[in-house]
Length: 279
Image (cartoon, rainbow, N blue to C red; front, top):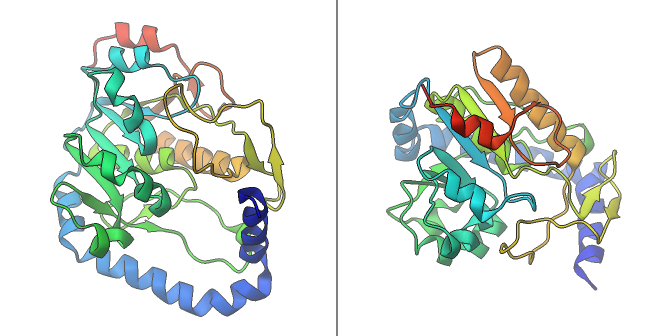
């Protein structure tokens, strides 16, 4: 059985109403307890100490899409940057390093953990559910939260105003980073390398896998093992929710990605942005 066949079986189980009904009480209690325990933790206290510490500044949130280049990263050496997941595989090609690194997907963290330990990054955020297993002095933990729904296809992403309580699970680490950036006070956020287009995607109902082998998932130099299946419709909703929050809280989010399919945010050119001195 190949990975795609396994994914189809898992997908069917995740969408099955009766399976979800049986799991509902357990999953609801589990999620609420994790959120409650996190808010009382030293990790949440640390995050609260960071609130608005970068107020009024700009930042760049780096996606790992195929449009991203090492030259882009070299241009951002003096900027506040967020990056995630397998971006680490580009570090041997550049002196650039993000100030903030995020990996909240538990399976992906297992893939990157060893390599992540090799690099000095100021803030490394990972999933609170890994804390007991992965406690290391240079890791900080965040709590992803989304109410458990009886209809998985009806689950709605949302934006957390207070990431010391939880991050609204949004099906894309990019939106998780946007929430952290907003909480830290950044009011000008630029997305780069967020192509929002994948070789394996769910259909509009999130129930059928659509494959396009011609599409690349990652920037050159980032390995494509452990392929994930993306629900682009849901992640688009997550970006829309992020824009709604930003628009009502004095935050500007721009898309500096070359190409791609993310049209929620105003498009800008990276070089034009970098010619402007940050305030």
